[in-house]
Length: 407
Image (tube, rainbow, N blue to C red):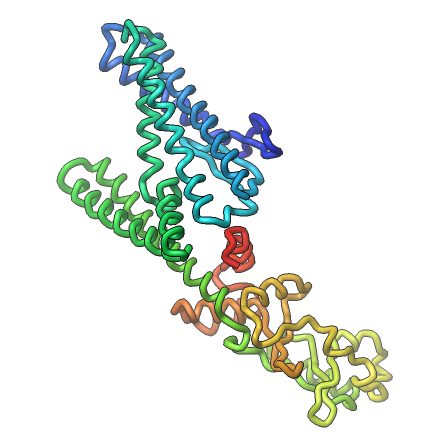
């Protein structure tokens, strides 16, 4: 569903998703029901709906205002934000560059909870010192204050997607000097909390309340799976960061002698095992002298195949996109994505060709490092299409690592 822009500040569009209005209605309905149940003798149905709607509206408005100040602090600490979209009780930020310091991240993470507590304190003081607690306006102020107080504590829960999670990671990063230590610790906390919620939900499901037990079990299971996924991503990032091309199993080069004619080339093409193979590397007495594309057959008449030799049509090896065997894997993937066909030549330190890698070779290497061994028929399918197995978005992971300053 398409989001709607409500304003633009510092060049950043602030948008609202249609779900925001669904939350506005549900909160209004829930609060009005609560007012009818607890204060039905004071407020009529219309007044209850007014309290419900305005309480919900001002709560969501306060969230937007908090996000504006949070954005201001983020920009001052080097964060580059493309857009901000408000969903439910929070916002999703599309970030091009993250803060690169632990102290900066601590300041960014603490902004929203502090603003929630400050807003709650001001509103609750106003309501407590009011002459009449039965005024609709005071009732609304009190409810918005209490809800802001709740959001402040909610944001401080040490879960990865909440400010509390980022705060814990950043504090550990600051004192240990390692960004990864904070990330690992937080993931373990998330996994522990998720298991506790899952166990409590199962107990509640069978012994107390079916509905709440189901919800808690679902949330716990979701948290466990999320923690496992985070662990897998962390492993993938380490593989990309520290592995080298020399660790990969390369695709052997297809050789052809420089004095071979086009008829022999045609026979080799017909006998090839993989349809994606289209390059032959030309040799002269064991030395690599260049490469050819099998499509050169189309440029010469069949009648002249016997008289034409591949050595006369070769291109220099240096014109083939290449990397060195000692290069980091993440840099190689970036080079691989820059090519038109997804093939790249691997050279040793003496500029001698060793083999070719493609997306399937890289993806299979990472899966093996993670402990996954795909069946040969599945691997052949990805080899044929030259894709990363199982939809692994390695370029996107690398881009995210660069935005966070991990590369």
